[in-house]
Length: 125
Image (spheres, rainbow, N blue to C red):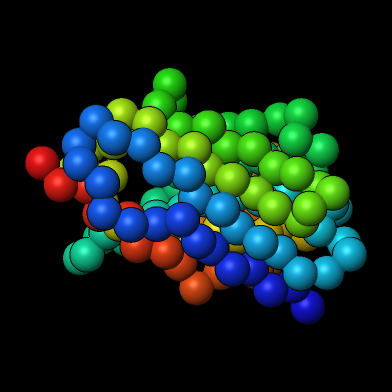
C-alpha cells in the first residue's frame, strides 16, 4: 500500500508561483512513475505532468509547458510540481498519483493506482 500526501497549495496572485510537494510512504516509491492531476469545480480531472521512476523522463500537458516543472527526489520519497506564471485558470485541486506499471507517458488517470487527497490552489486575478 502506498500513501500520498500533497502539500504546498494556497492562494496566490496571477503571475505568481507555488511549489507543490507530494510525500509518499513505502520503500518502493522509487519504482513508481508519478503524476500530477488537477480538478477545477464542475470540470473533470485532467492530467498536468508525469515523471518516470528515475526522473529521466517527464511529460506535460500542453497548457502547462514552459510554466510547470515536475521533479522527484527518490531518496526523500518526494515528488514536486513547481508552478510559475500562474493564471486564474490554474485554480483547482491538485492531486499527485503513483503508477506501479509501465504506461508511458502516464497521462491518463486510469494509468494510476494510488492517489493523494489533493491540495487546493487558488489563483486570484
